[in-house]
Image 1 (cartoon, rainbow, N blue to C red):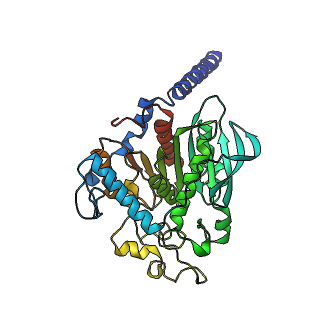
Image 2: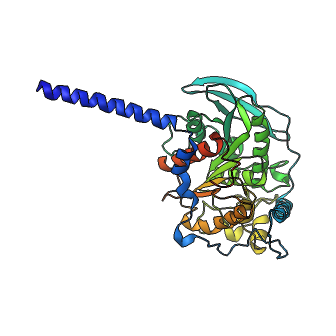
Length: 395
């Protein structure tokens, strides 16, 4: 009996040491590029049934006059053509606000990091507040801007819906800036408008992107942040926001778009709803009570129906990311069939001499899961924590 007890105790001690050593090894290799790449590399390869399939999307590698892009130099011209065409249709941004810093409103010590409530101007004459989470340690760190309806969602210590991305990343050593459109969300108008809702000269999804670009400049001046390693991410509404921001503003080093809706579609309302007046369907007053006609797509107004008639889709916006890496954390809105649109961006990367810059994960729900978030963490750890991974052309 005593022998059995001693054996049991010895077994538990040995197991405890083993678990401890295993944890140490995992921690030691946490930011080892080879270990991280092994974890995430499967998500950069389409399943066999989608490899090479480009769908019915207009190729980003063809100029609007039909000429084919054949060299990296020609891609620069084509990229400028896409950018100018879309900015012309959506509305030109006001000058970006490059010389401001995050102003600290309050400070709070939390387990594992310091939380600052901060403010800055994210549009001319439009101020916002958010939360800056800073892990301990000296030196400049990689950072991620997290966008959603309210900034409080992403900084919760516990979230059953797994949307507390800023908190999770701060625990892993990233500086994070959580932002949201609290006032317009409460008002039911959701987005940002410039110069105001009644007279906006820019489609709201592009105004959100402009605000994120201004947030980049404010965050880049923070002494804890390495400006060359700032990413952006968001979920659903925030996924659309992050997608347009990272595509239209080249200083974001990489991005994660969580089930944003990669293409125009009316098959998944309200998940893919770019026709809404707070995305690409803005129109000035007089407004209806619900700010749109009943029937969603049939009642769409503003730029959205013009884009559909003109044969435009979001592969052109997404191609502006090339060759910067991005991950689509897909769910109900963006399933495996979205590889057909992503293959068009992979083709651009390939022309530029890059591989393994576009990834897609899948899950059966729109809401993130623990597993899908783990891939997000590993993606940012690989591309922002590990030196050289952003610059390397091949893995």
